[in-house]
Amino acid sequence: MKHILVPTDFSENAYQALIYATRLFENNPCTIHILHSMEVQASRLTSRVDAGRSEQVFDDLYDEADRKCEEVKARLIEDTPGCGHTFDVISTAMSLTRALNRICAQREVDLVVMSTKGQTGAKEVIMGSNAVKVIKKIRKIPVLIIPPNTTFEPIKRIVFPTAFDRPYDPADLDELIFLAKLHDSEIKIIHIREDNSTNDNQRMNLDSLMQMMADVTCDVEWLELGDSLTATINRYVAEQNGDLLAIIYYKHNFIVQLFRESVVKKIGRSPATPYLVIPAS
Image 1 (cartoon, rainbow, N blue to C red):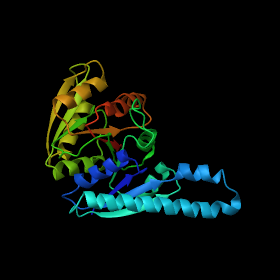
Image 2: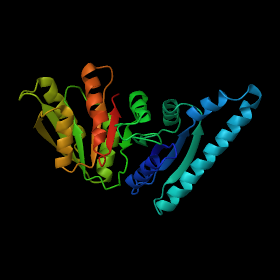
Image 3: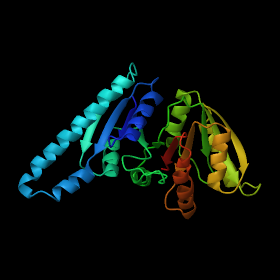
């Protein structure tokens, strides 16, 4: 049974991410862990109370968080009858990223699903600070980002941009391939090029990738770079009616830094397209 971890700040955006996760796996019952980090509330309260009262304050804070988590769980069960999932609630005073990494390791989590924005998300913000932190700091586990107002639709077409510059680790592609099989999805592998040449390394990596994708429906399209990398991907997703955008996230590379800033953040301007961010091994 898969384990899915969904953080919540009790906002409607966070609840919609829970709904999406529940329906995404409705044909494959999972354990869905509902996580609330009360780090901000805890730090505010502890700065205002004396040491003698701090233990009671924390107890009250945990009780309130647990109560709200159980309310979310009850609402979710009522809104998704017959889903077959098992739901678990977790409250913690740890930071969200620390809690996610610890729980992912302890409970063998396969996927994190979260909203781009929570309670304080402003319209002009492309992706909330928590989502950005999670993408930067989570270890090994893919993160499925759900933009606001996204209604679940079966995933029929997955867009997967890649440069073929690096070897692919089969473990990095596990969740992508699983989702494609679960929804009988087509994976559109796209390579955006500035010229017509490919080197031996790229061709070798492409061959390896196609072998890993042997059990799913996929093809490769070569696109000319338009106004920008972001605009080219956005345009392709829109034209092809993409239901999911999958991105492998590499760190400590200035080109990937640009890619992260330009694509992973700005792609959130397309509110109907969830995106799967896969941290490279």
